[in-house]
Image (cartoon, rainbow, N blue to C red; front, side):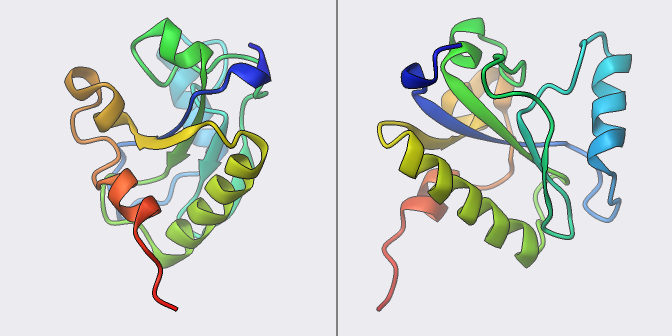
Length: 137
């Protein structure tokens, strides 16, 4: 994967119960049980707001159904389904701002917005509306 070809920063959910705080290691284990060789996502943000590096960003993720999307995106997964903690959202914003400084052409988007059929309710909120909203001064 060529880093200068990153088009999207895609936010996913682990689709685990919001009251169950699984670890990044457990999510990776689940992905391997499902047939993947590693975690599907590049980064995982756990319920405590900690960011875990899961997959090298030079290796395409497998969080999306479309290989072409995976080839041109960085995948960030929030543990949960839709009720994320304030710590997770704070860290997500930091992560996205950091990546946008490196890949300023990349669009921040939710899996459901990029792939409506396969992404359905993932990550459970409108990522673009949340990320790009105007900040009050």
